[in-house]
Image 1 (cartoon, rainbow, N blue to C red):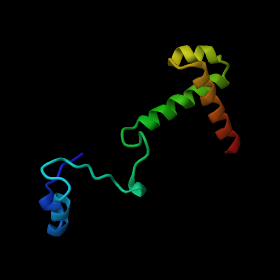
Image 2 (cartoon, rainbow, N blue to C red):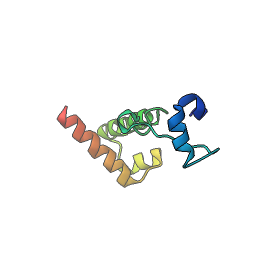
Image 3 (cartoon, rainbow, N blue to C red):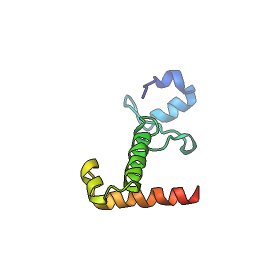
Image 4 (cartoon, rainbow, N blue to C red):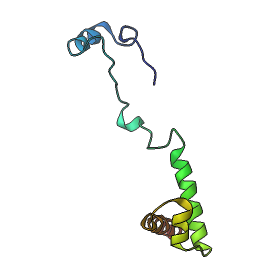
Amino acid sequence: MNYKNGEQVFPPKLLEELQKYVQGELVYIPRLSTQRAAWGEMSGARAEINHRNSAIYEQYRHGLHVSALAVRYHLSEDSIRKIIVKFSRQNRSS
């Protein structure tokens, strides 16, 4: 995140209006909701989790038991089941 000087970014009238509320402090201005990236999109975390979940589903399809997958991936058996159900639904609809 980059910080910018308000004098260089805002028109003078808007800067004066903002100074009525806050002076000399850092203020975060969020992106518009239409321009926000989804969780993990920017860092690549979402892609890594999708890749891991796909591997879990494939290993399950090839006979690995839920309990073994839970140990291998350090997840609960319920989490493994949720991943399997999600991927099986996706594969049925495609």
